[in-house]
Image 1 (spheres, helix red, strand yellow):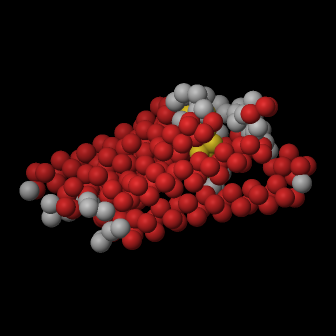
Image 2 (tube, one colour; image 1 turned 120 degrees about the vertical axis):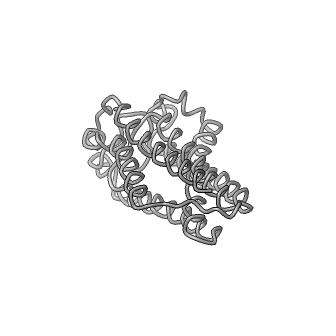
Image 3 (tube, rainbow, N blue to C red; image 1 turned 180 degrees about the vertical axis):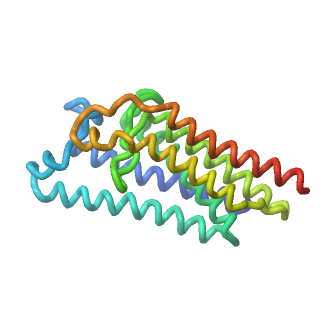
Length: 223
């Protein structure tokens, strides 16, 4: 728990760097004098017509996204003394980073206009898209869960996680990811995203939250 403030500070600063990079990319491909960032997105065919350097830049962007996850994971490992703490520190770092990514972009460019603004979340392995509210809700959930795990660690009562818990948590996470990726073909084809399937998103989120709350309840009854 003592290292959590340092992890949070890193995530806030890292979000600034991430937002700055995205602002630069949007200035190149979605300049404000042409309306700024919006859907439909540029397609790979359009990038190819613009020149080989733009395809190369796309490859670099994919690498940057992967390295972002590596950096957050290695930070969590460095700040933890066991796997439970590492998982908790990662969820906290990821959640804070993701939320402050939007905070910084709002300060830099005024985007997003509101929480229902559509965003391109990730490109690996396919484009993830959703209104901003969805990843913010996931991030808030991750932060809260991470802090609870660290709380139990700090009082010397580590949370027990059974295989059933991991299976349900993984299932919930995969359903949430599916809600982000389900329309990737249309997005890659340069079309407007289909209406977001909130029912699918909340199904996955509630499976995850429900499983975690059951873990907390079980932990409390055992102490």
